[in-house]
Amino acid sequence: MNALNYLLRTDLGGTAPVETGQTLLALVHISDAHVMDTVSPARSEWMELRADDAYWKPLLHMHRPYEALSHWVLAAHVEQLRIKPVGPWSERALDLALCTGDTIDNAQANELQAFLHIMAGGRTALSAYGGVHEAGHELGTGAWPFWCPDADARDLWKPHGYPVVPGFVARASAELHSNGLGFAWTSLPGNHDLMRQGLALPGAAIEAIAMGDHKALAGPEGFRPPDPQALYVTHPEAFCTGPSRHISASAQRRAVDLREWLAAHMQHGAQGYGQAQLRSGRADTCIDTEHVCIILLDTHHPAGDGQGSIGRAQLEWLEARLVEVEQSGRLALLASHHGSDALVNTLGGDPERLLAQSLLDVAHRHPCVVAWLVGHSHLHRVTAHPHPEGRGGGFWEICTASLIDWPSQTRSVEVIRHADGGVELVCTLLDHHAPAGSLAALHRELAQRFAGDGAQHLQGEAPDGNVRLLLQR
Image 1: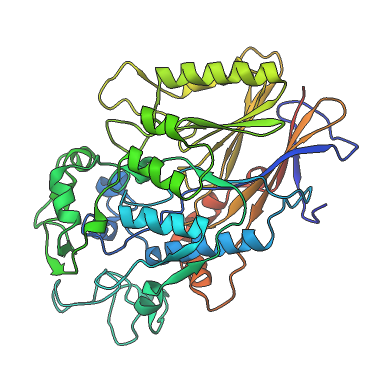
Image 2 (image 1 turned 60 degrees about the vertical axis):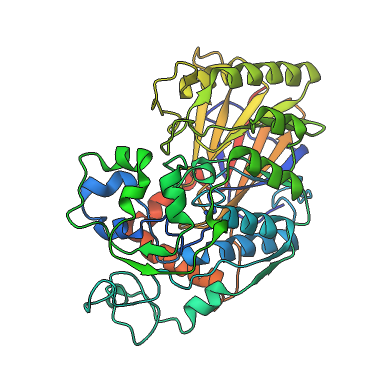
């Protein structure tokens, strides 16, 4: 049994078990890796330089000083899980690694291939040459507005404690070799997996820019549209026309659609996907185990923007699956990218697109549902959803923070059934333990610095961390 301290939560009833119980499932929850091509001309890092202006806040974050290390961080977590693929509480071998979306940042083919080669095993590289970490004269002779790790470059970040890192761009751009997880894994799509910067549906104009040879380093002169978020959703190319530099063009920066995303996951062994999903063009699927059915739901909004929704047909499909689970006497885990606070997207006014309450209503009708695993918010949070009629029961919503931002952790979830019929979910936060001096360790240092006073918010409070979540059955 793990020596860590766990907070026992009885918000949904149940009493502390006196016996070990039977472990039905052990998985690791990974979210928001944002594997990223930082040199992509379809990105608009310059907006981050205006972060102090509330006008631009709906579009942040468009840049983090450690973004070029995103794939190295994922690889470090994958390696740690490969070394120790067991649930920390029960020591049961992990049945599954589940990624709840935003595995890539800008919906690009080269990002998708990098993510898959890390998860399944292989070699990959994402070049940082030509990106904002390399200071130049395109923006004048003043201090470079982005962090430049070179000692001889004058920038606006090193005076605030960001370090000199010799050879940073070369190291970040080097080929990475991953041995893969070595056990079953899958992922589901988030808004960044299928939309430019997680906001805009791919269109001809932004695609031409993405695969082109000029990268904007600043916004167009005097650029201040009435509603920047609405404009980005419909015309992201408008943000990419300011002062630029010449870079190497790449057709691999093209956007992927859901069918290509599905086919690539199938090719690399992701669980749950097959010809049925390819034919339907939907990523909703089930992963069946002996005692628990894991139900994956695609909540990206088809009209664009970062928040999510769910289709009426999806909920009908979910209801049918939950009936089957109950008839089999098993438990159900739901998983989606967006959680209850993010299923709020009404863009396009489609009456077939429904919001959080509709999904909650379905889940509450089926007591087999014990948990809902989500991401998107980039913070650790565990929320109890008691039955709305106050008749006992309910389920836990477990949001796991991102890999790209602080605290860059994954979370194990172990499902245990006790002799009295009660169910317990034991959640443990996991670090990658990359050695000092490695790129993954540097990322963690920079992510904490960038988070600043918000680091504790992202980390969550004690009830959001190492917890034992009880359900009375």
